Image 1 (tube, rainbow, N blue to C red):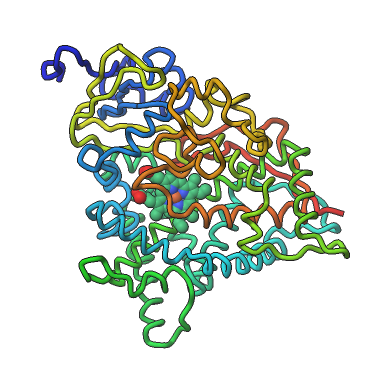
Image 2: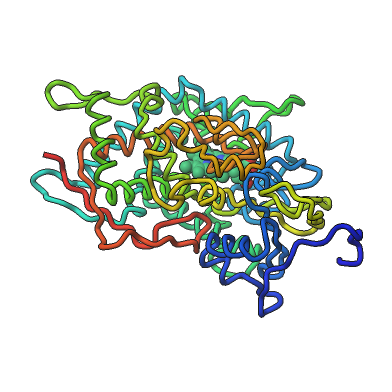
Length: 494
Ligand code: HEM
């Protein structure tokens, strides 16, 4: 490779490792952020590490994020990076198992299912589901006394219930039997870092994943058939929004395409939102003052004279500054996705330093490497944020609190709008929990609605405290960043 590099350019430095093929797999896998911050100190913003035979080039900071997320499709490809992981789980013909141009249109179809009108109706359904879950599952009352739960387990349950009742439709909610939960579990077990690294192992979990994919897909097909035959009522959910959609060339989505897109949506929202809601609850339990502020916000905005509360509409959830700050801050510190990968299709030339104007020459990131964006690194960068690793939602409420001078310097004089909203948009940004560019998340508004409803209803009824002495450590072993052992105690408010 070195022989093909022009004189004034070089390959990015390779992170030191002892075992050639294995490379930095253990360190990166155990704590990707610690690994990347340390590598940045040693090698700069751009470096390559070896991950089980793959050459992964990390580009850090807002400009590094831009390189991956704002890269042209002729240079970087998400489908080449992910299809071996996602296609066996979602199914064929959608997302990364089709040309990027088709994915872009599929995302438009999904957006049509997330109109303001749809979100408004989802708000009501989420309230109903959450209240029913408090009663039937959580079962914490003034009489029962406090109850300590493993937060990730209970939030996974509530997220799947609220998402299935809204996006996925009432038949899926009604079918949330043990069988559906079992299928979801088998799909999950096929969506791990092992599956990413080794697409075809002769393991039982791979076979179970394939069987679960087929059964789940058939389940959605039968719903669509029954709706068409009039056996089931027409609903305003994602299945309904997708049925009848057609690509620009006039080719309609088939029922099978829709079934596969529904699985993709289920998988995309389930773990990201259950992880985020778990981290929010843990942080609230660990910060009683913020919890009190959040409770007072609920009382001020929705409290009735008799001590009861009125329901939150979708519109309401967009005007809850403390809640908004808690969600934003949680996503800053606990972004569910720590690394975003793209396959490099054509050599990419980058400045050696991405954080300051540099005369120091350029690197070539060669075709065949993967390029890694880690928005979480700039989200926790002490050069950008005050008290970068402290969960402090107030920072989002203080005007100009985010854009401190060091940040502007860091951005090398480039104008970046740090106002709310704009902060998570452009591809060159220090805050991108939902990604950016053509692959940006389409579920952000849905996720904010779901998190606001669930957390809002929880703080109204319960006081949360940590169920462990210390705040839980982070577990990076799955595709999503989770708390290690996250216990939260729920006590009914007086
Ligand atoms: C893409 C995060 C919830 C559907 C993404 C990406 C991120 C992300 C970082 C970009 C991935 C990449 O560039 O490779 C999150 C977070 C969520 C969340 C943090 C919740 C807190 C949801 C929900 C849905 C969803 C609820 C469905 C309703 C999607 C889809 C994509 C996506 C369809 C596009 C994939 C692509 O274009 O390659 N999400 N997501 N997400 N997300 Fe989400």
